[in-house]
Length: 579
Image (cartoon, rainbow, N blue to C red; front, side):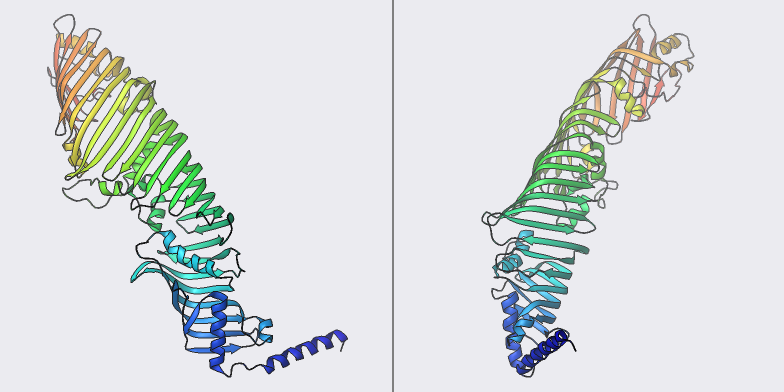
């Protein structure tokens, strides 16, 4: 045997001798008292009852308590565990004392006491963080397959299940650090936290991720001011689903799906201020500043965003995708006004270019303002095919549902350019259009609002033409019947076209409808039913020189109305003639 082996053997023998001189495991009450005192010292949890205590020396000295009840001295935390295991520090054991470097809670059920009336995330997290921060230092605490419940009195506010968490050991004034996983509201979630307990400016880090979303924060925290600053990252494939998971889902959130956001953040309680925001919303990038005020009963989102290009039609399409079962009359579409105005919004957006389906707009300035009982969306100004466009939708709550005001205006819009993007609506139509629409309606469904519309509309078209009808040829044929059909595939040039209408109970009635061009003049009367999307018009086409005169009717759905000259009642569907 070598000298080194001899020395090691003697050391082991001496250690066993020292351990053997201590009184272990035979005095159960003594073990329990020392275990309870050691656990309270290291993790701050007071064991109030247990079924059995066991101690083992190999392979490492450890204590095991079964069916344990415990609580924090201040009542912040309380609960039970199927088993509590505490790993003993070897040096303290040699000295005849029980001290632990690790405590494991097996299948615990832990209650977190939340002050009454506080139901925000900050109020749920504050008690356990405050409890850990109040310790002078603690050993490593490991939770296996546990559950945590935030409770206010007899009301359970939220529950974390399948909790597997490791709280790192630390000395006094060192930051709290833990990592692990849990299931919350049916979603498996991973979490990491580094939280300072002292210092005017100390590092803080937080990460939360699930299949629905991920959130990261890296920054600094001022404990005295309760303010955290740093960079945040937020990602989700479905914003409505993510918001429905973490809290009430505002109906307005359905306007956006995929979100990727980075920003410089300042967090103070439930208030979040974001600067240097870079947000990709369904692939379109916006930049600016945002603020979320969550102090009151109604959260308030405000900010200013700017971007190079954005698809506005996608917002409208996604906002209308998920509809609840209809109520009232068959085919009714509820306005869901209360859900659209559940939270306050004040957003201002400016874009170099925007898309509204196939329609292209430029230099757009828009605003979205939502208050309790009020929803307003406005395009303050937008460049549109050489001209400008503006629009405003205002809805306010009334006993019958909502009162809706719709305003729309065009100024010097080049219809030839617009027709290239909207061939089905404007194919073959050229000229410059100026017009306004102002309509008011009320009801608790879209159909009721449209059916109650009142207001006025007018439009002026200049220096253009349209395909599908040749008025000059029709007038020539009218002088020498039969009309034939040669005039239906040509073009008609006009110098001016003016239209004006009044709306009453969802029906637009023409008060003026005139068109003039080389060798002809046209006038019309009639109405358009907005609810049925149906035209009932009658008019006269006259030659400006001579006596040729052709009465006609236009009847049918908006997108496929039939132009019928009276002389031979020949019904045709000229492309673009009545659209």
